Image 1 (cartoon, rainbow, N blue to C red):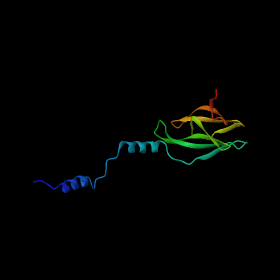
Image 2 (image 1 turned 90 degrees about the vertical axis):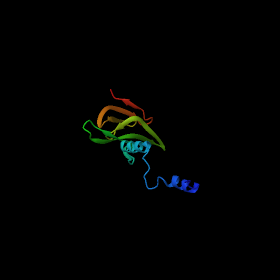
Image 3 (image 1 turned 60 degrees about the vertical axis):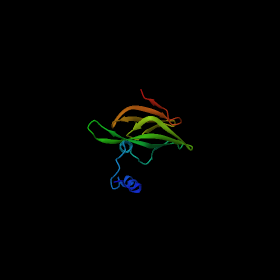
Image 4 (image 1 turned 30 degrees about the horizontal axis):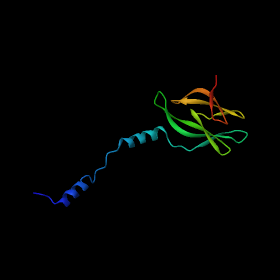
Length: 130
């Protein structure tokens, strides 16, 4: 017995109805990235006498050796309408103003403070404190 072409087409088009499509691996990775890099609001953490501001911006979730978590934040300098990201320096504590051109911050990794850096307020360049 031969089925009319219209019935065959309808069967093919409706064959998967009612079933949820499988979750693509990209969506699973996106969920993992969202958990690792949570979305949080920027927050002002320091203002220099000349009005230059330092803000917490980016965020990542740190995990310590016991499985506990913390939030490690990136820093951005805002001065006269420009924004300068401080490269490769995520921290868990607010930086401290050193003088009119420098602030000090400690790098964090896995919820633990590490080396201390002085950061130039004009360029954003961190320099390890010896």
